[in-house]
Length: 242
Image 1 (cartoon, helix red, strand yellow):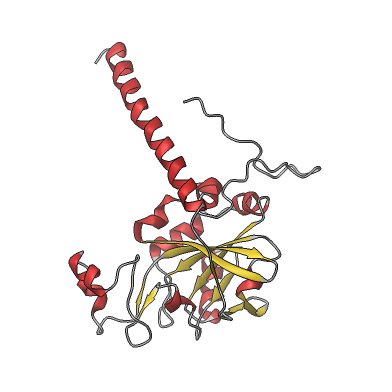
Image 2 (spheres, helix red, strand yellow; image 1 turned 30 degrees about the vertical axis):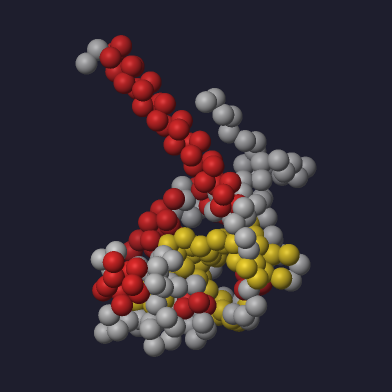
């Protein structure tokens, strides 16, 4: 193929790429406009500094992103895909999130002692929180057990799951079943609101701090000015040359 032919094909592809970017921007706007639901239940988590509530996970910030980590209480190691996601969390990424008043937390159902052993094994610095003994995983549909709560996954009930070829997820003999997910929360004073959750392949959409922020109610917050004296924030919006 000649360079001119390649360039013509590349320009044709660029049109589709720009359409995809605009479609994603529109989708992000719709996500930010979703209604919010106040979280009234007092969920408790075991963490490195003792037992904490959902509000404590915000660490004083406005937003909280929770990675629902697949880790059953009887497992010695966590899910490989969830592990890969945490492996890719850098201190820099977490700083960029905090610069936009957003905290990232990893929550799993395994007991804290098991999580701490796994965290040390992986060499992670981010703390892990155990939801063992609470309703958190069941209420957010990442632990599926019909004996505890009606099975729902990725916003599908039993009939829809059967129609989608996922009847296996309803097999009581395999339950409880752990599934991956991400949930976003917004704080208003001492009140916590659930703004968004995504499951299945939806958890693959992240791609750095911007991808995580795009899931949240406040988005990228590019209009916020960088605090004076700070050099660790991701400055400025990416120019739109489309």
